[in-house]
View 1: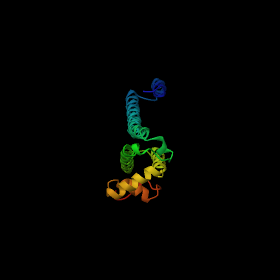
View 2: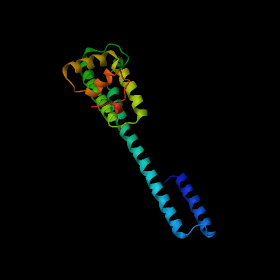
View 3: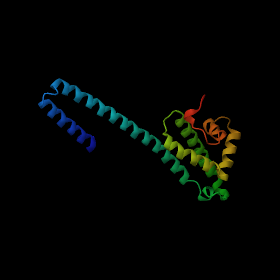
View 4: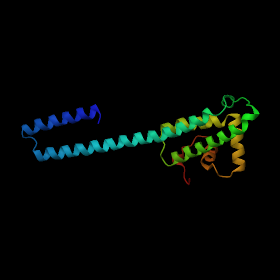
Length: 170
């Protein structure tokens, strides 16, 4: 419980005690009020716990993203050519990135990702897929694996403007 909650609780307790001493409230009414306050605090804490769990869930995707991006050569991120000997491993990493993007989109469609985080992610997905090497791998994947990344394909078809939460038939 936070300092704010404790302070509010103490203020409420003082008000109840003063009111009961003046005969305005009975102990039964006080007990009912305290119970209601307890239910409110429990509900608020449950809400805060859900927000924290959601943030942690979203952060796990950010962590996966960082791990993948760190293993991609800087030249790819700068839209410059890369050494031939790094192409295969980079293609593998970008394939894994595409899979992560597809999962992020799926999770957003199920309302498990906040709108704020989604706005950040969709911008990054669009930016990355516009990089030449990413784009080449993405085209190759779409041509060789039909509907494997259906959520990402749908987002691209909608020019990265739609929100998967609003999609029908996903």
